[in-house]
Amino acid sequence: MPAHDPWDHNPEAAFLLRDSDIHPGAGGPPEDASIPRDHGLPHDHGPGKSTPGVIDPGVTDPEDPSPEDAFHPRDHDHGHCIADALLKAEAICARRGARLTRIRRSVLEFVWESHSPVGAYDILDRMNADGPLPGGGPRSAPITVYRALEFLMAQGLVHRLASMNAYTGCGLPGTPHGAHFLICDDCGAAAELHDTDIERAISRGAARAGFAIKSPVVEVQGRCPACRPFQDEAE
Amino acid sequence: MPAHDPWDHNPEAAFLLRDSDIHPGAGGPPEDASIPRDHGLPHDHGPGKSTPGVIDPGVTDPEDPSPEDAFHPRDHDHGHCIADALLKAEAICARRGARLTRIRRSVLEFVWESHSPVGAYDILDRMNADGPLPGGGPRSAPITVYRALEFLMAQGLVHRLASMNAYTGCGLPGTPHGAHFLICDDCGAAAELHDTDIERAISRGAARAGFAIKSPVVEVQGRCPACRPFQDEAE
DNA sequence: GATAATGATAATCATTATC
DNA sequence: GATAATGATTATCATTATC
Image (cartoon, each protein chain N blue to C red):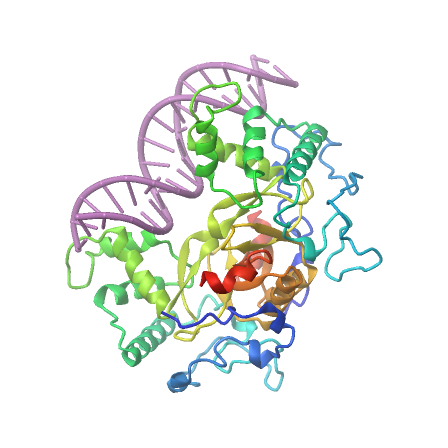
C-alpha cells in the first residue's frame, strides 16, 4: 500500500500549473524558465491589517494576505488593485519574454474590473461594446477572448473557476500555486485562499484512496462577510 | 428537493462541531431510518483492504466505504453496482412518492454504466442510439436529459461534477450529503469521498475569512490507483 | 523566413427559456 | 414534448505582426 503523499511524488505537478507551456512565447530561454523564488516586490495592501508578529497557521507566503483579508471591503481602493495587477503582469511578462499584447492586456483589465469572476462572453461583450480596443478595430470573436485567457492563465495571471465557467485575476501572480476560492453568491465576489490545512486534508484523503493529485479544484459557494449581514432579509 | 444542505450552517459553529455533528447524513431526516444500514450484499472487492479493527479517522458512516475502496478495482462486478443503484433508487422514490419514470430510470442506468462521469450529450446520444428507450419512442432532445438529471439530483441519486460538466451516480443515494470527488484523468473514473477532515479544513478556512458556506465544490484531478502504475510510460 | 498572434467561420457541447 | 435561443468551448484555416 503506497503511503506517500501524492503531492510529493511528483514535484512538477505538486502545486499545479507549471506546465511546459508556461511561457509559450519565449521558445524556452534557459534563464527565463526559472520562476523567481523572490520577486522582491513590496505589497502594500492598504491601511494596516497585517497584525505583525502573529503568524497565521496555514499561510506561509509573506506576500499572501491573511485569510481575514481574503475579501476586500466594499470601500477598498480598487484602482490600486487594478494598477498593481497590471504592473505585475507587465513585469512578469517582460521578465519571461512573453508578449502582453493589447488584446491580452485588455482582457486582463476586464478581468480585474472587479473581484467578481467574469465569463468569457462578458469579456467579449465589453470588448465589442467600446469598440474592441481603445484604438478601434474589428469586432472580436469568442476565440479571441479564449486565446487571451489561455495565455493569461499560462502566465499565472488569471484563474479559471471551473464551477462557474468564469475567470478572475490571480492574487499571487506569476507563481505557480494551487488556490481555493470562496465565492459569494450574493455580490459575486471571489476570494482566493492558499490554505495549507485544506491542501493537507485533501492530500491525505487522496493518499488514503491511493490517488495521485494533479490539480485540486476547491470552490466554495456562500456569503462573503460584507453580504452576511443582509443574509436574513434577502432570504 | 433535498430539504437542507448539510453545509448550510454557520461556519463559526464549525469550530465547535465534532465529527458526528459535521458528518452529512448522520443527523439526517428521521423517516430515513428505513434506509438499510447494511444491504447484506457481499461486495467482493478483491484481496484484503478493510484492516478490521482499525477505525479510519474521518469516516464514520457505516455504509460509507472506507477511503481505500473509493476507487473500484478494474475487475469488480459492476453489474452489481448497477443493480444495487437501481434497487436503491426504486426504493427511495417509492418511499417518497417520487416517480421514477422510464426516461428517468433510463438516464440513471446510463449514468451508472461506469464509474466515469458522463456528459449530458453522452447520455442523449446513448438514448437516441438504441432507439430512445427499450420500448422505442421519439428521439429525445437535450432538455429531456436535463430534466431527468434534475430529478435524479433532487432525489440524491446523481451528483453533478461542476468542474467537468458531467454527472455520476451517487454512492450514498437518498441522503443529503456533501461529497468530494477524485477524478482520474487517465481512465476517467471518479471516486466519491466523504471526508470530515477536508470538510473541517474548508470550514475553518472559510470561517477565518468570515465566509458562510453554502456548498463546497471539491473535485480533484489526478491518477487513480489502477492507472498510477502506467503513469510513467504514459507521459 | 520562422514563429507567434489574430481573424473568420463554424462545429460541438452545455444549458435554459418558451410555448 | 418540441422548438429554439443562449452560452461555453474547441477546431480549422487564412492572414498578419513580430522576432
